[in-house]
Image (cartoon, rainbow over the protein chains, first blue to last red):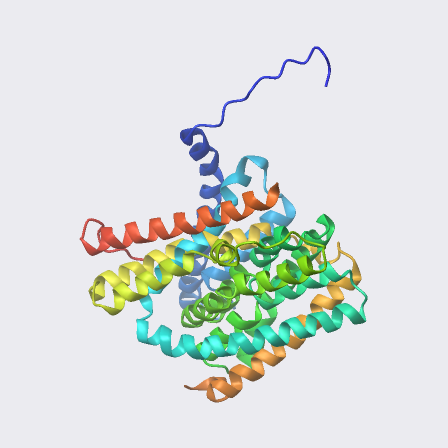
Length: 363
Length: 38
């Protein structure tokens, strides 16, 4: 530091300043989402008015993602918008909590019980497959751990939660996140096609998307692209999967610390609580309130519509932050491990859902 | 010290989402917010 430099403490931005910095990006998210709704509405009218012309038949979910992808990968997201665009995670979680009102507790316990069993099988298989592939392709062990954690539980959140616990190289974290997001982007376009080809039910497909697609946002979008009912089941399966995050990250933290390559975990209970995704508690709380008859039918419909409004900017955010250049921008070996592992996991979970849900069609 | 911030930020986003959702649910339950369409 130069002797002439005078350190000036910059004051923390006030809440009003922070709110103002978020508004442009939030406006962009809602703008893209609303444009998606407008395009769906417009093309529905045009198809009815001019049946001879093959206008696209796309739902607002896909329009929002395509618009986001187009903007994010051509114009890019200007710094002015970035803070607000980052709030897509808040909208996503708000939507998930509100969806809790659409599940009666007995449904959560009944279907969630089956979902938990499927998640447990998926976890064991995903971790085993990723470690096997990591060994075959000779990836650094901590990168393999990150890919295994990301593919078995809930993508980027799990990788970020594990980062502090197992202290990987910075580039390992970036590579693992890029691989998981890339594979999530591929799932957006392949899963619905597979679901339609196999004539899967909304419930069966939704459970499959919740079990196989790693990142929460991509998982929800992949489910919703098949239908709103499918999206609801995706939320349930994905929420059940996210509940395991603390246990898996703790297991890896203990493993790496036992080898002297990560800090010790002193308070395991506290560790589990810190890593536990708290929004699940909100989901359960609204489900309990709905089960006890706290809301009437009209109010439940309003809550369902509020969850749709919350998901609207979240869908736009997924499109905006998906960088198609990442498909080729990373090393081939982590991507190859990710692709092979995800294909194996997708096929296994598809088999599990088929077996558990009467060939994925009825229940 | 990126990790504690990241964890803290995740917790905050989770709790903010839960707080907003419960507030909206209460406003709807007590008819302070009119029926919401989509």
